[in-house]
Image (cartoon, rainbow, N blue to C red):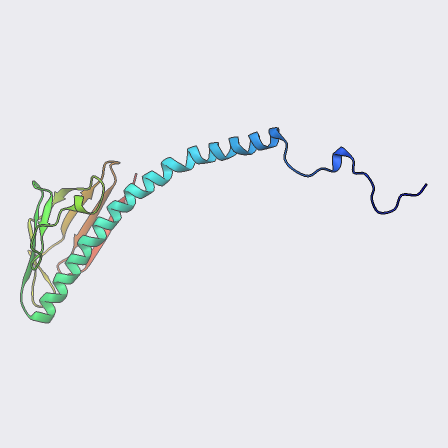
Length: 156
């Protein structure tokens, strides 16, 4: 007797996963997640520090632009003791903690930076503001006499 078309399939031809294969895959996912989650948290905390530094740099650029366009001096006042700074035209002092996390001002070379009508700063020289977070990472914002602004990070 010849059987055409419908042959019985053997048990070896069934498709799917065994319980052992599924457990191995779940174990691999758990291991990868346990490594990745702390790194993502650390990256988010350092991202908050970078955002705070960029915001302060943005305030510096804004005040320099206003000084140039309005032919008037504008100052930004930093208060390390109260962990805030004041920008003209903003009602309340800005605090780095506003950005997110535990960001604080840890160093200020000069309390008041004034942008003059030519875009330069007073007092002349290299003025720095240092921010830090709970991981010990820092962002040092530097304003040069010519008004150039840059930031250096030491991330942990």
